Image (cartoon, rainbow, N blue to C red; front, side):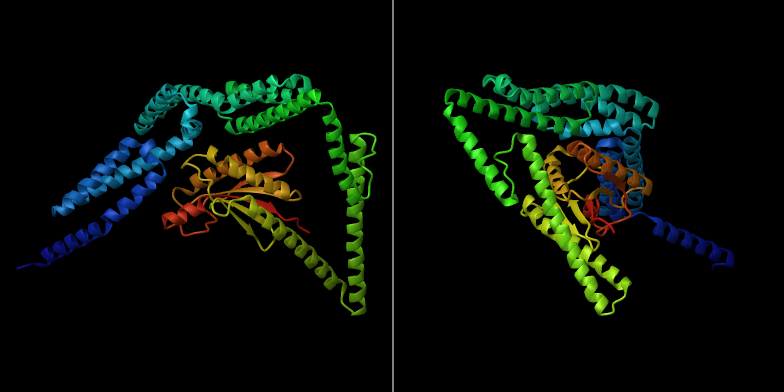
Length: 473
């Protein structure tokens, strides 16, 4: 027979067991947390903890199938603990050694045909030593080993950069010299040689400057190709001088057609500078006529509203509405042209028009690696297309926005979004050579466009938006 003391003791035991059961972690919770750890690249950055977490989870499943629930709970707790350690280790590595992580990402994202296998193997081994030290929570040792790993990674990157960025220009220069480019197109040839030297300097002083190397390589290849084209034309004309007259006649026909549309005589201009001056004057006259038509239209509207007794404030509102409508129509027309620039069959860029007539280029296929702000080289072509869109909207300021999902700490996500926005901004600053105002802003996880509770939603939220800002009144 129970006395009051025994009953109270039994009730306390029951409550304790209920509390324990309520706090016990489930397989679903552990698996969800493990998926988040994988998103933070725990397999790479904390392999020891991740492996132990995976083994403990497998043990828990085996214990459950054999009815050993107490051991299963213990294994699940163990797995959850190792997952947390793996998450913390991964974030510590990416926040305290970001340059090392991103150098490795650049190497790994390089086409294997440009890499030397022995250097890659050595770089991966040196990187694994850094990871081991971070897992052991020995950051002094990790940072010391990171210096050696960085040297090896840079060596691998240097070899790859010469293959990927220097060799194409070298081939172009050699081909141009064969057709006597030095004689017929020295400026274009020197442009390609200058680009080649710029890349060699970057390889020596800043092997991580992949975006700058890419931009210089493109310039060098274009200059070498132009040099070959001009030199080939020079050679052909030297063998057949009569072709000079044919070329001049064709050029004059194009100038005459353009001049007839603008009401100027470009053919008989004294030189190229005079032609440019005449074109500028003609374009300015067209703009003045257009502006005068707008002023006349505004005056007619004002006169009409005065007769109708409309207040001045209403007229100002009407003019502002008209201005906004004109901006919107202009944006819509350019967006129709933009849709032809991006392949509609490939889901890479989404083009949006906001109520304020801002144009958003959503880079849907610009997928950064977790914890990294390295732009994947496979997306350079897509970004070049976005650069053409920026040129099309030449009167607009540009804002690059970085966004993340909600996995991880707020501060971590905020800083990561800022780094990614700055990386993309740097790409366009290099491409446009400082000719446009470009700002970079990170919003972290503040502005989701999809549900962060699903993998597909989180993927949509991890994005870069290029915002072409409409002129404000």
